[in-house]
Length: 191
Image (cartoon, rainbow, N blue to C red; front, side, top):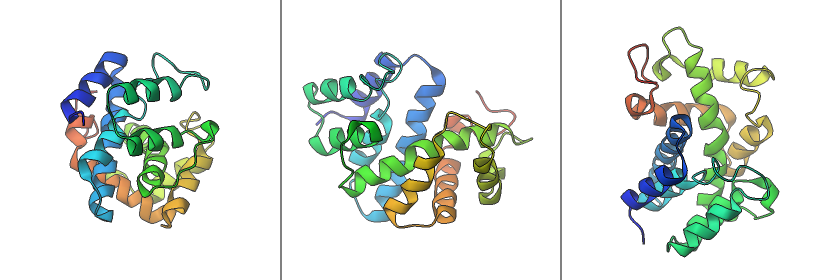
């Protein structure tokens, strides 16, 4: 199986955008924490999070993403559980989320991106100051981070059988651990 370094190099080869790379790193972190929570394979889950959007910058259409990337991953020897979960994170592919990992990826994706937006509008620009209540308030504002699919934000925790509040707190806590690396640690942070 390819290594984490292989996965990072693949992400960087296909993704030039710093924000999209950070999104991959954020979902990697959330997936690692979810694997710990559920007693699953941390490296596999984390790599799935890191690579879920690696092809998006070059292949952004629904016809291409994540299908083109999935073919690349298969050619490079990534396991079927990873490729199937990545296909399932996009509802329009029709690939069902049957594994716990696939459901976790779906639950981690949109909300992780949303957390960056919520953090950046905080006066401190720090994830350490983000509260569940403020995230839920921002979710209700359709114009705030309008590209984030609210339906998917709400469906993800349901598929994992956790409340939205629990899920949001879990995401906040996971991102806090890597806040500096992700550019979420506040005013002096890079990014």
